[in-house]
Length: 101
Image (cartoon, one colour):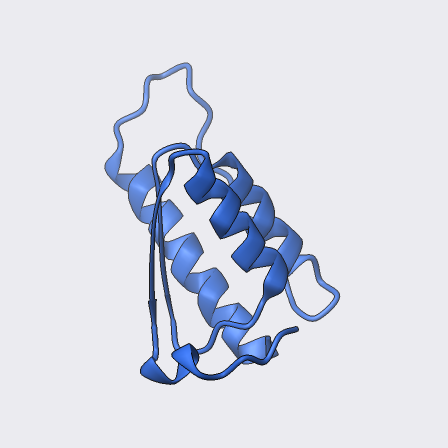
């Protein structure tokens, strides 16, 4: 996956996480959500996304123009197998493009 596409996927996932956290009231004893910044390649971006997907309990929503990350695809499949509702929106060209990074 290119730097640009990983960055876009990360922003989309982070945006969804922040939206959920911002929209959820929290008790006074709960810590504030943490924000982390990752870069790619070799900046821990893929590992951070996989970690969040592994922790998902209810649903994961992904929207990406291009998606070629095998570790992220595997984490999405594992989340689905655990009963997490996984929805992915991709560009039509993704159905025939079989590149993998």
